[in-house]
Image 1 (cartoon, rainbow, N blue to C red):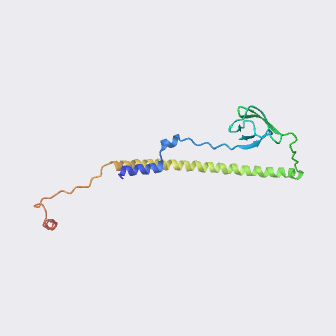
Image 2 (image 1 turned 120 degrees about the vertical axis):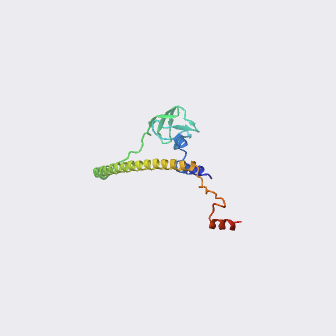
Image 3 (image 1 turned 90 degrees about the horizontal axis):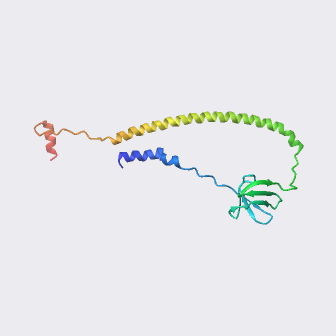
Length: 183
């Protein structure tokens, strides 16, 4: 491997292929559908049971109109999307305990204190992230300059110093002796 190839390999390991990374789309998170059984016995898949939710029947958008669930609730669809949600009549009424209601003010103040502490923590984290981002940017610039220098060195030719060849007459007695032993 030549020095230039080695530098390119190390550069790609550290920086990656920046051009390809810039154009890479982030994969979308797959939608999660829940299945609901209609009074007719058909099963529909709904991503969210609210206006704007997507409804499919057998993998196709649900037909336009009103669809009734087994529990009596209804949805109205148009173009495979929910346009209206109707709760089932006679749905169970939830009774709230009086004791639980008395605890709400204390719980709310605890929530406010926790929220204020969370806001402070978030501000501190944002500051830390900004400082780290600045440090990383400086390090990246330093690395780029270092690799530019290494590339310059790798691309310049390196020659071994040449010794001047002496004739036998120019050699000292010791040099003549050493030269004669090599033969």
